[in-house]
Image (cartoon, rainbow, N blue to C red; front, side, top):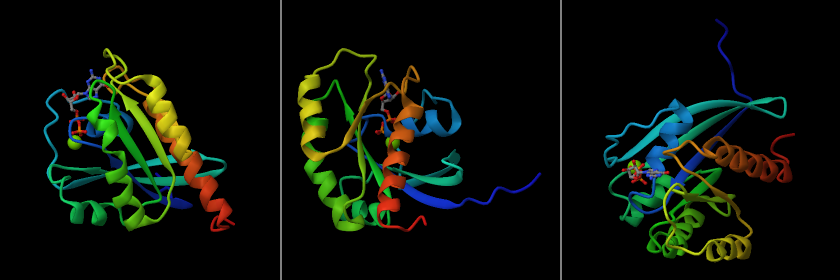
Length: 178
Ligand SMILES: Nc1nc2c(ncn2[C@@H]2O[C@H](COP(=O)(O)OP(=O)(O)O)[C@@H](O)[C@H]2O)c(=O)[nH]1
Ligand SMILES: [Mg+2]
């Protein structure tokens, strides 16, 4: 078997409050499974996925933050050198959208202004946040927005594609891909 050598490597980080579904989204995307007993992650877990996009092989190194996410120092270390980030919202919990500024502050301090995709997760459940509010939040910041269900495997691949597209677009602008 030939070993695939990636043309590009991107660090993608998952941001968002506890229990919004970060680990479930990663599990679904990388392993196409959902461990029903997925516990609260301790530390940070790295997962790797190779993706072919625009005639190049991209290695996605996906970081999933664990239980100590409330400590800002750790958050910045976690975000360092990130190429892009997901901000995950649980549509049944309005407070998970309110925390966006705190998460983005840490991301930008650590990694600069990298692309962000807002992920509205748990769309299989009854929403407690008005969709308009999330749209407005995304539009005002120029972020892509995608609705997902890790449970029902809805739009999970698309979320990663959206972020990869944005990351590649930004890298091209900086001419680092040429
Ligand atoms: N109904 C529903 N539950 C979900 C979904 N995604 C995750 N969950 C559940 O939400 C809980 C927290 O998920 P987890 O991935 O551990 O969240 P994390 O703390 O952000 O990593 C678990 O019980 C998951 O099974 C979803 O799309 N729909
Ligand atoms: Mg987790």
